[in-house]
Image (cartoon, rainbow, N blue to C red; front, side):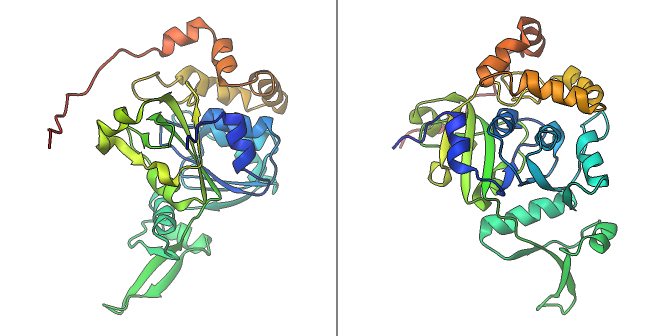
Amino acid sequence: MSKLTTLSDAISRNLRDGDLVYAAGFTHLIPFAAGHEIIRQGLKDLILARATPDLIYDQVVAAGCARKVIFSYMGNPGVGSLRLVRSEIEAGNLEWEEYSHFSMISRLQAGAAGLPFMPMNPTAAGDLEAANPAYKAVRDPYSGGEVVVVPALNPDVAIVHVQRADADGNAQIWGIIGEQKEAAFAAERVIITAEEIVDPQVIRSDPNRTLIPGFIVDAVCHVPYCAHPSYTQGYYDRDNEFYLEWDRISKSRQDLRSYLDEWVYGVGDRAEYWEKLGEGVHQRLRVQSRPSEVVDYGEY
């Protein structure tokens, strides 16, 4: 049975107040449209987990939807701090847990494998080990030495943006691969957003690109331009001008509220958002075609 639905329906059916949400994607394929829909639906007390929170969590926190963030590197990539998240943490309004990148991915790997924890020596993060009580040391049963371990991370919901998927949820990614597969397998429920919905035959024609199989997916949403202002490899470029602009916007609570009112609450969905950005932005972010070489899988 088709799992194809609207993003609004996918969020309302699969997210609840207080859920632990993992919005996946590293550098590109960040599901900003899903973050905006979470804001529009007024979800509260969410725990937001992500290896690199990026602007998506600055916006969700600014809207008052979160009570905690779990992260490794946190910042406006290439620009500076996530001003709103940082100020809320410093004010004591937002709970937080910090890990190294390796630690976060190890937590997801444990969750995906159904294990209670994951060994990960060496951490190269001695200060974090001292500051974060979730880091533990256990005895290696083989050598007798100590091994650092981190607990499994099992999100209630993982949201993963992909280039293409079929209606059953079989999802394909190319370009930079992040933690999408691990997040999806670790989560209780999985929402896929896709630039394109394609026939299953297209998915089967290139099986190595299928990172997420349909049997673990709960909802599939056709959401072109979902990742803006980040990028989707082969579809549109990163909007570097917006990342710089966000640094200015996020200095002022009033400017933050004005942004949310105009660009999140003030639009009905991603199609309206993209149209509002205008042709100038569309042209600036357009990418030229650069197909990979054909792979011949042969006939049996």
